[in-house]
Structure formats: C-alpha cells, structure tokens
Image (tube, rainbow, N blue to C red; front, side, top):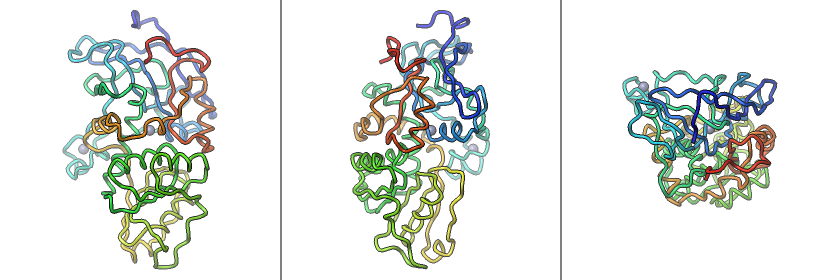
Length: 359
Ligand SMILES: [Zn+2]
Ligand SMILES: [Zn+2]
C-alpha cells in the first residue's frame, strides 16, 4: 500500500523522442477528490503504441500504454463506492447521447467527444501508478485474472468490429493480419459460432497461432488470387476484416470480397490502399470502418473474457516484460515475430522480480 503519495516516485517507460524509450523515475500523480490511484498490474502493447513510437508521432516526455488492468491503491475523499484493493479496468468515456452520431447508435464517434490527440498519451499505463476518474471504473469479475483483464480494451474493439459487420455463423470470413488484433478477431468470431475463418498472414509463427486460436485455414498473402474484372474470385468471402493496416493487404483483401460482401477496415496504416470503385459498384459491396467500442462500454468484453470462451493463453504471449523491454519488444512485434498480445508489468527491469502482491 502506498503511504505517502506526495513524495513517492514510480518507474515509467517514457518516450524521449527519435523512436526511443527510457525508463525514468516519475512522481506518483497526486490524487484528486473524485479520483482513484490505480496500481497497474499489466498493460498490453497496442499497434497504436507501435505507430506512435516507431513512426515517431509520440510527443517526447509522454508515457504510452492504454490497455491496462490494475488494483486500486488509494481513493480520493469524495469516492464512496470504491476501496483500495479492488481489481479494476477503466470504462471508455460514454457518448453524449444527443449528437447526431449518438442518436444513430454510434457513440464510438460521438461528435462531442474530445478529438483524440494522438500526440498526447501523457497519461499512459507503462508505469506503476495511474490516476483515473473513479466514476468510470469497472470491477473485474472474480473469475477473471487481473492479467487477462488487460485484454479488455482490445477485446471491446474486436467485439465492436464484429458487431458492426453483422457477422453470422453462415458467413465465410477472411481476416488479413494475424497479429494480436487479427487473433482476437478470430477468437471473438469463434465465440459467436463463426467457423469458416481464413487468416492471411506473412509470418509463419502468426499463421500457426491463428490456427490454434480457431482459424479454419491460414494462407500466406501471396496465395490469395487476383480477381477478374467485375467478377469474384473462385471462393470469395462474405466478410473481410483487414487487420494489418498494410495497403497491399487491403487491396488483395478487397479482391476476395463476395457479391454484397462487407469489408471492414480495422488496422490503420501510413499508405492508403487503392480501392477499385467499379468492383464495389458492380458487386454491391459495403466498405466500413471500425473504431473504438460499442455504446455498452467494456462490460461485454469483461464478460466474454471471464466466460472461458476465449483461448486467453494463446492470445497473450507467455512471458511478460518489464518497462526496459518495451522498445525492443515493439520492434519484435513490428517484425511479426510475436503473434499474441505482449503484457508489460510496471517493474523497471525485466530481470527483477515482479513487486510483491502483483498477482
Ligand atoms: Zn489499443
Ligand atoms: Zn454524442
């Protein structure tokens, strides 16, 4: 337990510019009346973190990491319904309920939400303590380990993606990109009874993991056929999830889409793909984007994670890393070496034991 927060320091992985991260000792943030101070248990490395660091968008001095779970260390004076020791994640900011996006049932793109400042992730969770508004905390179900609860945010995204696409067990689905996002998408599809799922992925380790997670088949990207003008390929897909963010993968994936098929852009990337609008017209296809979460927040994701329906041990890499290994691990993730989600524990060095009481 934290006794004196005013003078305490905590280890943090700080982006220092030029694609570099350094472990520094930062002051533990001061607790406000309606806030809770959460001791981070685990924080997953997200594709967004890779973009921000490896493509150097992040603001020097910022701490990244947003896929976290933790335990309350202290609560502010006005917080009545939470106590130290509770295991929690943070629910997303709800939509306003009134703007035209919210009225159409799409709070993920609420017009009154502050625009995401991709440069300012200064309150990230690659550090020991995180300050949060207590009103937005959600309790982790008893049956779900805290470590696995760090998958809540990406699971909520995968659920939103699958819900937007209206996938049914009759669908034949292609997932391009077999990294953490693609694997979670496959796992969520399986939990919905979808079984015809092909994953296209260049890295052999990720193809192997995709099969274990529940893909019915895997292919290397170059095995996907080119479509003839105005016609589908021989075995087209009714739904495609493009999770790689690579233009070439998206262009090839568009070729695989069936008549009246639905194509979902999930992975962001630097170079935009070329879209053959003639195909979209003639085949009456639907192209959509999926971003953020359903209006129901993180509870459905927590329930799904606690349900036992997802192969958590395949979705999370077995070895957790310390703050000093965040950057080298980002490079390994970008190279496709690691299939699953890598969890960071907020200890300064991977060589040191996790702090006591971190279970
Ligand atoms: Zn994320
Ligand atoms: Zn709104």
